[in-house]
Amino acid sequence: MKNDRHPSGAPWRNFYGRFRGKTIRTSQQDYLENDLLPLSPGAISWEENPDRNPLDLNDVFPGKDVWLEIGFGGGEHLVHMAEVYPDIGLIGCEPFINGVAMLLGKIRKADVDNLRVHPGDVRDLFDVLPDHSLSKVFLNYPDPWPKKRHHRRRFVTPEHLLPLHRVMKPGAELRVATDITDYVRQTLEQVPPAGFEWLAEGPTDWRDPWSDWISTRYEQKALREGRTPHYLTFRRV
Image (cartoon, rainbow, N blue to C red; front, side):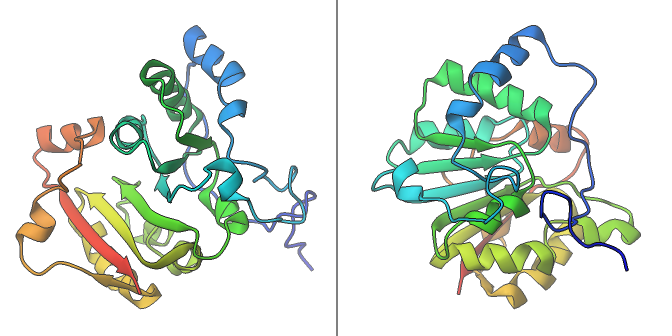
């Protein structure tokens, strides 16, 4: 019978995408070697935390509400939120190490201290987040996996949405930004059954960005290529 566990004790989880690009600049290597570990929110990996003990977020962000960005890309939005909301604790999760390096450079430049980084799979983070611990979650321009046979790889599937629901507070807000119309379709089909309600009352509620939104490089690329951004807001029931 096939072993369903990694030697570390972790469950086997398929991961689709890249962990690393072709090159890491010298300055980015400096960020990774010197800045990443101090910005850890705690023991998340199975090697560090085989018993899956919950993180103490009050120790990480004393007295603060905590927000999460899943797949932060180059980090523009995450650092922007940290600057706009200094009284909020933010966690960014991104497995692509080149994006992590870009974020670390932005953090060093902005000199924000209310941001922590997990350079890995968000499912490992979900394992150790306490129930009802997140007040807001961002999913900005997630990998679209455009081929139909790959749609199960998208974030908006029960494998991700059910643990996300568990770690969000009742009434917490989930924001999804995407330029892919079929991703909008799947989001509206999958997110509400996972325990969320869509807050749109009219077309402007998905056509217009949030008041604190910053347009990322991914969004600018979408606009240049003629695709329309959609901004979907849900509330955790």
